Length: 350
Image (cartoon, rainbow, N blue to C red; front, side, top):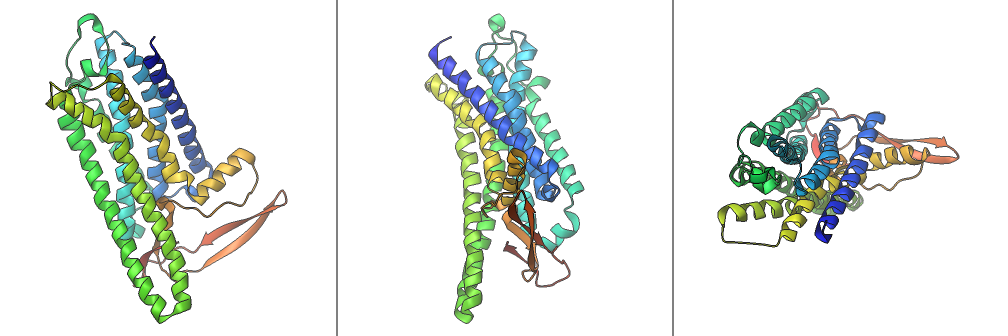
C-alpha cells in the first residue's frame, strides 16, 4: 500500500470515528433530555442519525472501494450506491431543518397549530424514503455494467451521467438553492429588526438598549446561518465539480490526490454538522455535561440558530429556578408557552 492510500484510509477512519462520536452524543442527548424533544430537534436527530451512518458505513466502504473491493459487481455497485444514499439523506435533512425554521419564522400561527412532532416524523420518513430511492438508483440498473477483471471503483461502476445530471443538478444544486433562499429570508428578517431597534432607541433609550442586546443575538444567529450554508458549499461542491469535469470534459485531467481530497471533504461534512446544529446550543451543552461528568455546571449562553429563533408573544415573561447538585447551583430557564391568540405575536430572538 502506497503512502497516498495509507493517508486516505487513515483520514477516512478519523472522519468516521469523529462522525460517530459527535452524532451519537446528539442522539443520546435528545433521547435523555425531555426539553430537547421538540419539532426542530426531530430534524436535528434525523440529521445526526444520517451523519452517524455516514461515519459507520460510508467512510469504511469508501476505503474498501478504494482498494478495489469487493470483486462482486453488484456488491461493488451496492456499496458505492450506499455512499450516495447516506450522504443524500444528510443533504435532505439539512434542507428539512431550513424549511422548518422558515415556516416557524414566516408563519408562526400555522407552525404552532400544525407543526407537531408527529408531523415532523412523517416529514423525516419521507426524506429518508426519497433519499434511499435516489441513492440506490444505480442498483436498480443505472450503472456502467461489469468491469474487466471485476475491479471495484466508484468511477468504474457508477455512471457519471447519473451523478451529474440526476444527482448533482437535481438533488445537490437544488437543495443548495433552497437553503440559500430560506436563509437569505431569515437574514432579511434580521435586517428588518435592526431598523426597528434603531427607531426604538430614539423613542425610548432604556428599552432600546434591551432590544439592542436581543439584536446582537440575532446577528450571531444570522452568522451561524451563513456558516451552515457555507460549510455545505465547501464540503459538497468540489466532488461534484470534479464529477462534472469527468463527464463534460473528456480531455481534462486532474491529480488523483485532488479527487481523494474532495471525497474526504464531502464525508467530513457529517462530522461538522453536530457542531453547527447542536453543540453551540446551551440545552445541548447541559445535556452533554450531564452525560460526561454527572454534575450541574454553569454553561455559556451560546446558541445556534436551531434554538435561538422563537415564535411567540414578545411580551412573554421568563422566570428562573435555581437547583443545587453537589454544591453547585445551576439556572434552569423556564419559558412560558407562546399564545397563538395574541394578534401581535411576532418572530423574535430569545
